Image 1 (cartoon, rainbow over the protein chains, first blue to last red):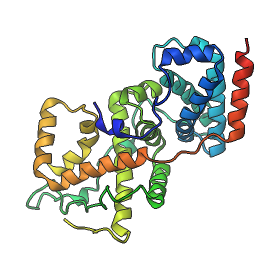
Image 2 (image 1 turned 90 degrees about the vertical axis):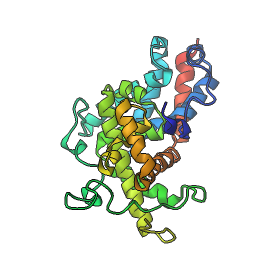
Image 3 (image 1 turned 90 degrees about the horizontal axis):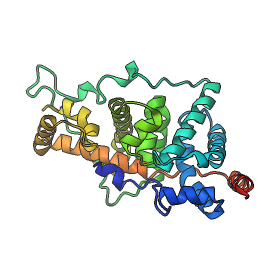
Length: 228
Length: 76
């Protein structure tokens, strides 16, 4: 379905055995299986938790608490969702509780004013009096070619800063979808939001991050700033 | 379709959730507008860059504690 997320390098199931086998091994006390899971999921979990709580330390606490809950609760995993979705639901619940303590409560049931309106500056498009209303005044400038560009430290820094500036819910959704590589169905199920709202939040977040990269490329040397 | 409508539909398009008529208008516009083709490509590049972000991992001590907790809890 979505080609983008398949191409993403997020920490997917990868080397891990299928859910049923994994769950059975955990129940049986297989420490190697637990260690593999711990190493494969903790990074994504830290990112997701960090979207809810105010510090890296708090995110680490949330992730540790989540793993303890998984250890104690694996007997109750029934396979109705994937093991990863089940684990992330536990994470989100713990993170929300912690987020409340940090007075960062997030309402998920409806969208906010910040979730509406154009994601690209309307000034970028021709107005009613122009020859082609609604079309680009000037095309977005070309970015340096993807083949030659490794995601540099500077670009990573720009993206991290853009993520930090996003409204909370947008940050949570783009973290789960684009960084952790979850499908939209999984994200809706983890966060208990509608597919439409999930898409609005993701779209706004992606547009905002793209905008920051555009600003960066427009001012960094070696790009063709403004070429049509 | 106009460019200002196109840019708001890229995520729905990439997720494959546009209705058939809108998808036809979307791809029709894509075929004839270099600016929007570039915009869509840049959104995809953005997503790839996000997927490539390095993540902080759990500190070694925390990892050791969790492994110990697993061992203790699961000991027959």
